[in-house]
Image 1 (cartoon, chains in turn cyan, blue, brown, yellow):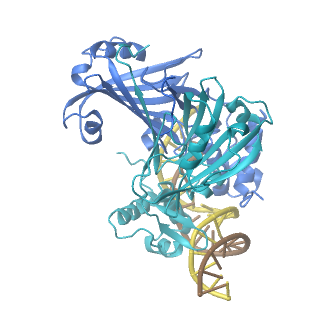
Image 2 (cartoon, chains in turn red, yellow, purple, brown; image 1 turned 90 degrees about the vertical axis):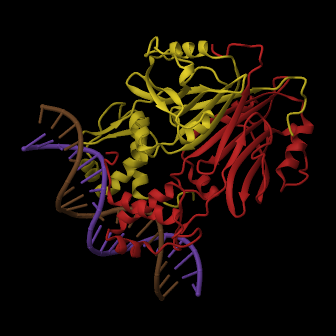
Image 3 (tube, protein in one colour; image 1 turned 90 degrees about the horizontal axis):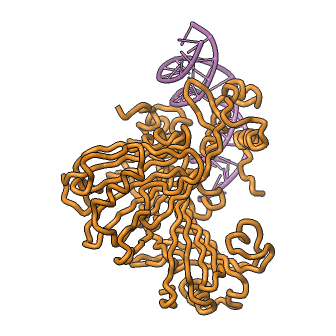
Length: 246
Length: 246
DNA sequence: GAGTGGTCTAGACCACGAG
DNA sequence: TCGTGGTCTAGACCACTCA
């Protein structure tokens, strides 16, 4: 019925999925070699590899060239909260979430200049955030700020909240935050940095913050893997405006 | 440098990409058969098919079984505007965007019951929106409403704004709209309904609208293809609340 | 029925990782 | 060096579309 293509690779993937979910294959464990699995399921190696590719796309296994295929540890799902608060991942409730920040100076060009509404080759400062849970990368964020709003020295490069606080002290209050969400496949660079398959969808958020003078004070490009992150936006309607439809 | 795998299929895909972008291959046109292309590029058929799979994942071509591979028409990018306004795709500026709505009665269960905060097997009404631009599907929306808030008869099933207006007239004013955005690959059903590849990322938005009494009056599950849609959320900060960082 | 894409095979050879 | 995954070949057979 719902199986127009119950092909071999789907059957194999289904079997391995079950073995993973039932705990017969444990997280971190290495799978048998592809040749062994192909022999066990009595299929050719390309077919077996197609089956593994399905699981890789679901984030269940990780392929490491020359080393083997490994069952991934299930990752805690994190939620990005919209509305213009902390730069990348505000709530680090319990687990060992760590953020590393690196700073680069560059000049605006193309899309970036348009986003920040500055002239091309204006000086900018870029903060590259990489958020980890343990050893696994969790999210990636490029934050761009006009150079004159960026601090000369970064107080604590390993803490994103310290960076955010320093940034906030340098600029007037915000008036508006616009966030544009989109879905796509990662670039090879992003896939490598996040340790995800190139066939794992990512959620991207482009955030532009404007101060009360109408100046763009920050643009952020966030990349969140689809298997471990989503974004939440809450809109409160004042009670006096009764109609919410156009 | 940046080419760890300048494999044959990437070279072929690159060549076809160029032919498409330069107009040597026009939109709607049928490509030569895979056997012919394989002969032209002097590769085996699986390799050529891998190259086409790359283009399919980018939304550049459409594979139709038994018929051929076709160059896709570039689609206008649409923007879903968050904040709890029209159900699916509010701004239909110029083009021939059309929406078809079908209505189903069902009972709450599992995730749906939790989302709407109703008891399992509560009566619901589902509105299935399918938004087209010309002949191409553009987005998909499942909207669920408690049965007592759904009209007995639908005024104009082919107009989503008429449905929305009828819905709005039946319920008290909204107090809060929560929208959760996520990225993933489509289910086979979604890929078929939207005429996209299963490797094309989709942006999903789960929207829950609550009225001033705290009752959930609507839950919507939107599926937007990543190559033709994104979502925009705007947060205005009242000028009196000076600090926007925690 | 002719032509198309979809799946699979049984190998070959190369690139990478660890001992 | 050796075992691993990554890529590719040259076919075979099936499923689908259309005249």
